[in-house]
Image 1 (cartoon, rainbow, N blue to C red):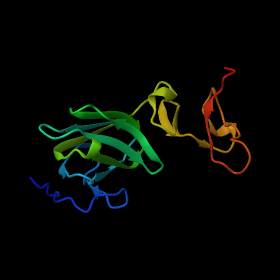
Image 2: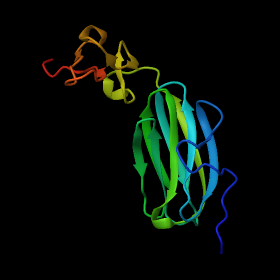
Image 3: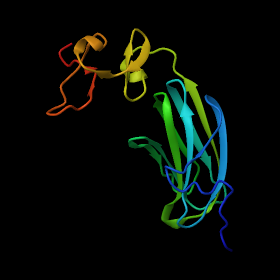
Image 4: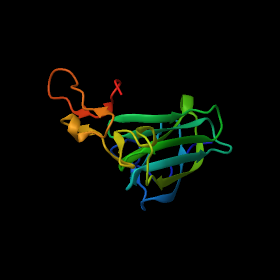
Length: 173
């Protein structure tokens, strides 16, 4: 049987991702993957927090997902022929879920994206990527001097040039 593209086309690249409406909470999406066809689904996170992405592929071939940010892959789920799950802590921003068939697998899928805001933190480990815990809040880790970083952190020089600097734990404390 021939495979027919879903109604979300043309969503075959990061740049042409179909964007889900809504902000935090549950957002649902569905589609069909055909051989040599990928789907990209964009969503926004308005407040840093936990994101849970699920993809159900009952009866479909081996479909996989990856979570992408503006700088590339953040996480991937490649279960062998089963449902897919990614759980990640993310900063506020725009992200894209890439749905694709392993080895040109095809089939229908349904998915959900659930976001839960992080309101407090006890340490930087509780915070999303590119943030640090400062006074129980996750804040940007971009810095130009150590005085911009929370206690127990430094603002290291990242080598020659004008590379962006990020607060990092001070190994001496």
